[in-house]
Image: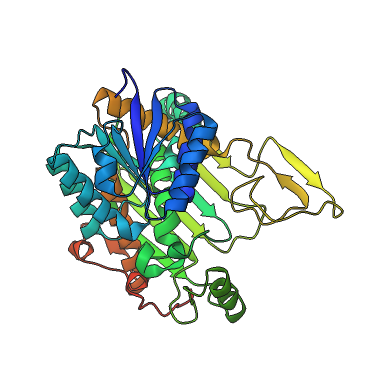
Length: 415
């Protein structure tokens, strides 16, 4: 480790790893020093991106152990698909026990596909004495951070703490086949995106001087549905786009989910989180919306209410892409533009915080304990949807529960 700088090695080189690399432009005390991916072409592309941005000249490694043993790697960011994360952590811990000197490990959301997997991952990093961070970018989005700070500084002292947080994430569907696979991903849109909405909402409801776990989960009620992508036309379209590996007529995953989570404050006051997620939103692109409500105040966030927009007439034609906003659905008309997506979505703030925590040897604001807590709520959502009832905490079944979607056994029941 160079004095006062953190060398970051990436396990995985796909879509989210590229977001993290781009965000490093706003992180002054870290360098991307290495990348490991089972797909060499992806690793080479990510390494070239880092070099082109001037945020590092990373070496490309063929294994996780090789990555961890690299003397220029001080911490590892886990950005591999969900079904590969436990194996990556096992390899990292083996490397640490074999002499690798790592200050910390950070893992993308959701931490794992089940409570059992998440608990095993947490036990492993604890056993190796590794500092750990849970990469939940929306908690660190500037609008969320600033709005939370204002509400708790100005609104709460005058009127009391907030009691309701709403969060929604919607777009037209993921980029890669594994996201669509209930077995590989651990579910559908609920597992993929409600983790964002729940944790961002939980952070808004938590006081700045409280630990994230200060709010105790009491009840979870949720519904899931396959509204768009199991329809014959779109199932066929999806199968074609994903190379034939995904067939939502035979094995669908949910493309819509909603949940209501009731929690209790340390003095017993009830607070509520409402979360909605969808892979069936057809609009300009990815839409993140959040609200926080209290006795005499409220705040709102909507990422598509951008301060920049462009209009392109029907005579302006070009190939499809995502040069205006993530998950872009059009190239004509009046389009919002998110000028700096890594910053707007929270990746820059998240990575700055994680780097500083690892350099200081302190636990980050979001740890794998939080990742486990989020996984418990996600599994409670699936259990509630399958039972058609409210799940009350504590629920011992969550420790061994595997959702029907994750077993490839969900029939695609609609709400």
